Length: 528
Image (cartoon, rainbow, N blue to C red):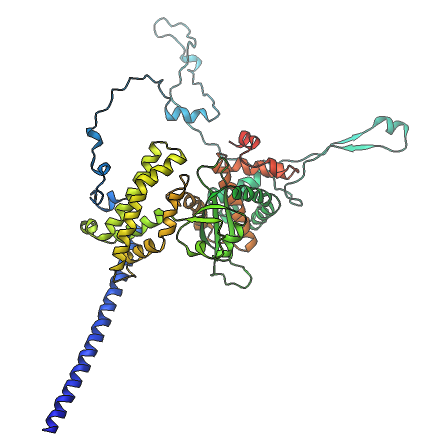
């Protein structure tokens, strides 16, 4: 009997252990299955981002369907049914065609085509015919390749004939010569350096390709020489402008910030593959003096932004990077989050899914909330509201939508099982970034997204894709400084090449940097 009880007890123990092991094994299988689903989701997202047409609007992602999650009367009202007051017909002068407008910006030449003398015979009477009118049949734009001209600066000597005749010595005077842009360089000129910098920093043409083109033209300029010219110009001329532009930037009370990667091959104490960063700061859309500045730094630490923004007080538009929320950022700076980044989290969640189920998943609701906010912003823009009016309209129309969004997000987050999924990351971002995303409702001048600064990152990213890396920290600093000059010139409506040439010509001759800022009358009149 005792033996039977021992056997039964042993069997139960084995059964319990087997059940526990099975449960543990099933838990591991479920965990691995969720992990596989997360990895498959990321693969599908990567393929969608690489091959699909980029779009973050629900009309495309959801097949044109509108989610009925808003009950406001504005969401269901049909504007087409509203009777419109009859408008008085206004006659406007006919606008010139685009081709004609384009020609007005170009110098014009005419090629008059005439009959040979022996063909100017009247077919009726045989008399001689004369030209009695001309008409323009078509217009063409003719390309004439740029020319490089060797310019010799000739010094003139002046002597006194009276002294030569009456004295035993001669007095000589020399004509003044403009100082060279780069002392000791035999062939550099303001226009040549400006052209090289324009090709690299505006057209994204690497120096080695420019070197090849110079070789084809028979001009021996190496890429090392061009790099030295760029660094010299940055250190002696453009850095002065950069400091003044930074002072102007920090006078504003609304700024945008972002950062992007850069590879620098020869940095002390670091490997070539280690990432360095270019931090970007720019003024907001309401300023009269736009400034766009790029700052090279070896790291992405918060102290980089804190050091650059020293003395700034106001609102700072950023993405969700934690450095902007660290203790190093002064209390005088109020960080405002980016709703475009929030919306992008939901579009990334929807992109890997089959089109027929996108409108049925919870992420579609989050995307619809974000799109509602952007639709309201477009309506404010159409109404041409002043900053105070926009602030009131946001509190009245947009704030309730944002509050409903965060209520929904917190509810979904509380029921979430897989935080590593794309939807889990979107909800985590929403919950963690709430206070900063709501910052847009503090002032009517603030913007719903940080896209303004991201558009300024794009020219740098396009150039980096072509020239890949900077060789030294001084080269990286020079590139960041010259990008600042170029993009600030563009933001102020100037032609980058003309402004680079203007700066090199004037600063090399001793002009004050304060007189060369891009929003002043002289650059505006010469470089527009």
